[in-house]
Image: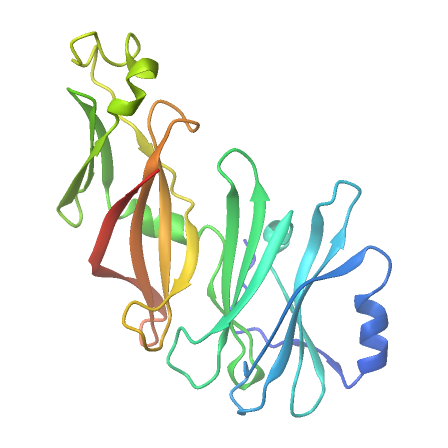
Length: 260
């Protein structure tokens, strides 16, 4: 994956008319638009998410295009080449760093059985693009939680984080018809030891847990039982951005299981 950290924008200058022709050229569409101060000068900027549409209604070469509210100059922020395509996408502007300006969160829904989605959080403070979060970054964070998923007798499943020393019991008795003869015998005893698994690529949502800035990221990781299609719910964790270490840190007060 190419490293774009701390790269400046591609500056297209004050070419407003030319840029709108470019943004609306054949097969290029505006996917979302948000307004807010993203460079820290207290003047609202206009942030566009644009992409090129192929024959299968799939958008490629997705990028950010920003019009500076003060200068009217336009800037383009490219996304990682291997992670710049999606069927659906959205933008969110909010402060994750406690700066007066807002960061840009991008969601790119790729699809598939697991509803795979890639996320970015990008700062443009002082007109310098910094990638605070890139695609697949959270997969490494979640693996570090050491989550194990084990089936137990009587239609129960243990979900435990060894890192946090926290555990939950999921009742799967409503799936008795599906599990009986495959996982459990008629008495509800395990036929053989069985483990589920956690899907490490999460669904991320910007949230405020205390009602004030900055925003945190709520990560929902799907819990799978006998297969990807056998969803048991999701683990839920909250992460905040640390400006000193320039990394996302887990809020240990929040770890729970949301039933599917």
